[in-house]
Length: 409
Ligand code: FAD
Image (cartoon, rainbow, N blue to C red; front, side):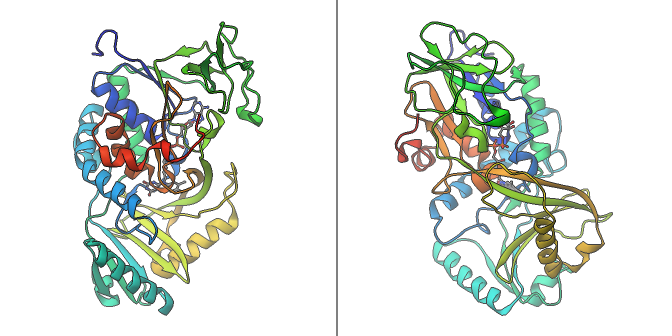
């Protein structure tokens, strides 16, 4: 039970990040409320769920790699406790947490050269990877195309089903009696901010309307940031304001609608295929003529094929071109995918930041803490994010500090 007089946190956003933070805080005895009109419907619903810091490494992202490795280390205990709290039992079945590794394969001669360079770079970083021939790859994964020329196995990489994770988080929160307010936050309540509380500056469907309680003296509830005053709560579209000692902004790609944070939407299209038997035993990713594609197998035969990366603003249309490219490249690696039934196609919005690192920690505005900007790795980084906010991860807290950007408010 929360300690009497303890700080009250309101978390705006119930994706994998906001729900994970809420669950860990509640478990630590902190009073917490989650606000989200449609929990688990954002990027977390689209995500493939790869927990793959090693095979995702790029030449310019060594800090992200360190964060990913630290969070992956936390995943087994996080999953076991979550499965127990949600009443699911074994996390392998309950969350489809798997740890057979990722196989990164190359198709053409250019792709093979790129893979060799990546292997040398990983070796320099001391990362545990094994360079394999095409034949060795096919021995591990018999459904790979004969034309696969070589691969890199990251045996420590894992994956999970993010839809099961968010469902489990919601169940665990309900069991802990954490209030979930199914409302849209139209603004942050600020002391002495000198704004009119109408939510001006927002756009379209998410514009601030119906600000009940907006006439409280000395408070304003505008969207966007820049008004400076201490944040003391959240304004809701169709319900009374909620006051808080601390607001934790975890609204993913939409975070910039509530505060001045450098977060933008990065569209990703992804599809789920279904086969009677699992086609693959581990995650397979590959570069086909320069384009990247991955295939993530679930225990029930689902095969996730993703994902595009597009700078299209808040566009979530699934396009024929996007799906065509994913299937074309996936078929080059695993020809059998064309036989599978299409179960689901969706586009999600990753919350991107200028340096691809998340924003976790105090914002610089009193009363406002950030847990956003997780871009391609929010599922992987969810346990670490909660740990940072509980003061358990000092190196990550420094790397992710919002203070690295000026003018956040
Ligand atoms: P979201 O899941 O987007 O949640 C934000 C929540 O905020 C939503 O529920 C929304 O309803 C709510 N919200 C928004 N505005 C408001 C408001 N005003 N008031 C109240 N609530 C609000 N990551 C990995 O680690 N591994 C992967 O394999 C992976 N694959 C991906 C594949 C695709 C196609 C995409 C799109 C993303 C992928 N990601 C992956 C990235 C991952 O999905 C994101 O980093 C992660 O989901 C971000 O979580 P979040 O909780 O911050 O945001």
